[in-house]
Length: 126
Image 1 (cartoon, rainbow, N blue to C red):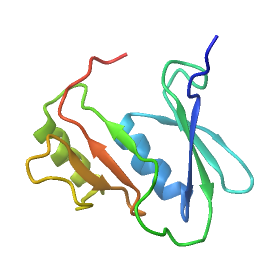
Image 2: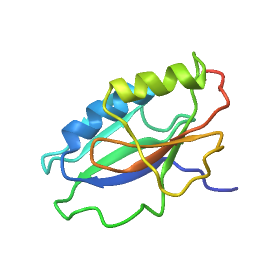
Image 3: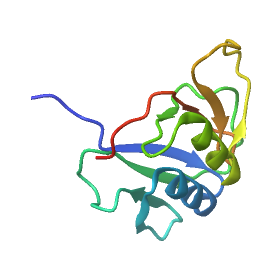
Image 4: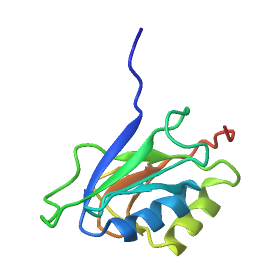
């Protein structure tokens, strides 16, 4: 038997801001809040389903350089251009990390500067 990813952990200065952002981007909900300010967000079905949850941990250290791990997202109900407009409207920013001009994906950053990519292919909803 193999493992599968159940949680992604993201250190951030403001878990509340990133929880709102990523819940909007992924249509997730807040699953748990811990006293230390950590927030777990995930699909409406909760932890343990086919999609991993995201655990946001408060960390006041500044982000240094380009992240070694980032999230890729695909639209499920619109084309890439329409999804890009939606992501920009909820607080994402386009960033240049040296990707080719003709890339089929867009590199964006969340409100704390964590890079993620919007890929071209549309996926079916789960």
